[in-house]
Amino acid sequence: MQSVYFGGSNIRLFQDMLESLTGLKILSLLDVDSAALEQKIILPRSLEVLSLADIGEHICHAIGSGMEASTKPSSLKTIIMDYGDAAAVSRSFWEAVGSETQVVLELSLIPMGIPEMTSQNKVVFSCFQHHETIEFFSAVIPRLPENVDEIYIDFNPSSASIDHEFDLPGGKSKQAWINLDDVLKKRHQLGMLKHLYFRCTKRDDLCCMGGSLRRTTGSANRAILGQLGSLLPRSMAEIISFIEIDTDTMYF
Image (cartoon, rainbow, N blue to C red; front, side):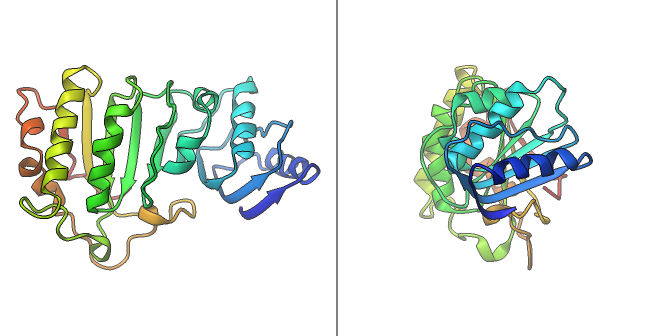
């Protein structure tokens, strides 16, 4: 569903539609907003993937309230959100999402703010291979809630989107990688980062998401996975390394 503004009556029609879709597995909402809502949005029990992009705070609140109020077990496996939307929603939304649902945050734009994920221990970041991305991780990872101790960073492999200097030691991103190395090592030493996984996987049609989750076209370049040992030498040198380079997973 795309570019919709819900008023008082059509939000009820939307809820009726959801209730009728008893086998719905994937729901994508893009550019959806509403006035303040008293009504909760109850997701179908069959739903496995919820994709939210450019979503108004009232819609997020209604979805979170619906998840919180539901007495039936949820089958929701994954929630995909723009990072900016994720940072804007309330802590109660993340508490309603719970710890069993995988959270994927898309980073094609680099906003600030920290999602209040107090119930999640794992987060997946989807991002381009850009200099600004490394600066973002250096700034944000130290500020993530301490319960988030398992991080996945999944680079888009599209050759056309790569900032070709971002992974070169001595290039314009040298200091950014040094800073990230320090940040990762410190968070690990504080006991707040047990595992960090790097992947570089092709994207398929992922719930109408754009940015770094858009379908990978053209040639793919996964060379970054082989460069990480030299880019993050201090973190990779830990006796029991907390960093894993996943070269086997090919698709997001």
